[in-house]
Length: 91
Image 1 (cartoon, rainbow, N blue to C red):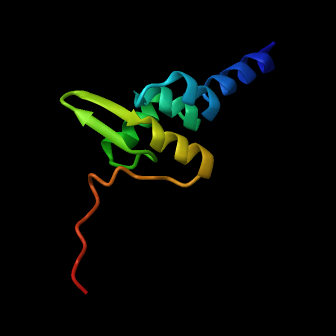
Image 2 (image 1 turned 60 degrees about the vertical axis):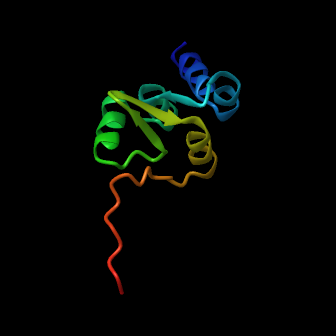
């Protein structure tokens, strides 16, 4: 029974399901689950500017860009927000 529950949860956050059911953005909580970590870890990564997908902040609301999440899920490569990247130093 426990295995069936895990299979259903995995299907809920599959790229196919996300494409079919999410709008242009999703919650940090749902994106974190899709990526395999907890809500708390997701918000911690957002706070540090290290969430593996593009994140939008509008006022007090934080949303994850669905297209970015799908690229990360399909490629396995992070696509950092870049909001906190250090400026380049001249060579």
